Length: 276
Image 1 (cartoon, rainbow, N blue to C red):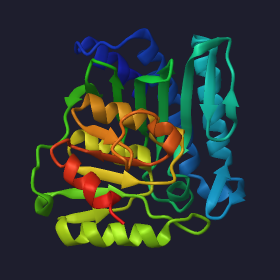
Image 2: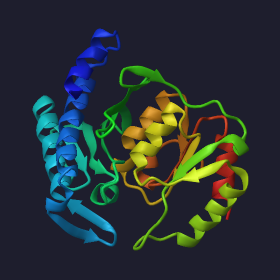
Image 3: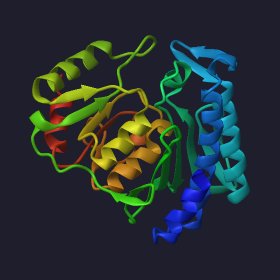
């Protein structure tokens, strides 16, 4: 299934590095595991981690698959993972940043919108990113300086210049999260100027969709590094811009807030969202 597609991409002339191929292989294996569990949601073991935040047997198994396959390929790299946290490696320059199941709540409710996200970070810089949407079998990936791709096809952000024609995505703070009122003010501003705002519940896919031109911009606060690491690189390699709310392009993973766009709309979008 997915592994056959990976080899077709190579034969089609879209050649990635050995590291990228390992990441794609790992994401495919974890994604197939998630799909099997997705069709058996009622039998899943589910434990509550916090307000509206859950961890499932499928989540843990997907992370185990990713840890084992990536460790086998690069045994000295460190890890930053949603479920297991930070694991130091002998190679202090390189680490994997992993979300085995972005969109857990969607998954638990039977909504087929979730993804596996893997990023490779070297000396604090993002070098490779893979986001796999297993239900639709969409593999988004990018390597620094080499462009962004979807299933072996080059992708680019949109070229829309008018807010009134542009579609945006976001994440809505829920129970247990702060900034409800500031978000409502942001949403009111965007409602007044845009063609629409969508909330689908998986930040990695919001960024991947932005990279393909399906969205023209995205914003969210209160994120973790594993939610956005791969997506940041994919958007940038597709020609987009990613900053925090203060318009800084570095150390975004530490701040946990993102404004991403097709580039044309970025300055106006950043000013609009950062105003009190």
